Image (cartoon, rainbow over all chains, first blue to last red; front, side, top):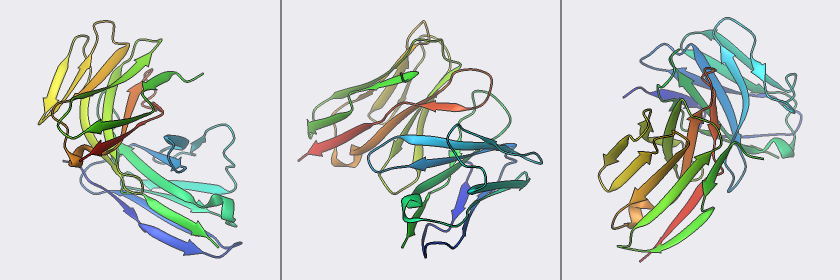
Length: 116
Length: 111
């Protein structure tokens, strides 16, 4: 099946620094990529949807200047958490989907971010 | 209110017993997806249902989508410890390719 690679799988950073998370579709072209955030014991919350070559669409309440999303190619999207704070500590998951309804989304393995 | 209601929120089942998880929407779904997750790990795709009345099985897990395409159930037969985890249903609510998620069901299997 299709593979989505997310890197890093975990990262610890200091408050005030920025951290970048990469999401790559390894064997298909992902026109659309999604970034999710998950708090313990809760479901996934969609943060933003990105389409290759255009600006990401952010969900209400998600700060676009804090969570920078770039989808520069059909196989790569990045999420940069800028000026990270401890409350940004969470599990972030990306998913990628070919540009078609009724195709499953393929998920990365997630990134556990801890801000100290 | 949530567009996709998933129940129960948590479930503790004796090993070997059967169980069912439900996912319900007030709207007709374009597609319904079931995923499994262990917290801190990525999601594993289980099954996708598209047509009203469709039923799919994978090993001991069976998922159904009702005729109205508004409700899906995930049924596990003779549960095993490997079935433990969080089960999530996701659905295409419109043509926007954007998945809407249920709240998840935490499944614990007692030995």
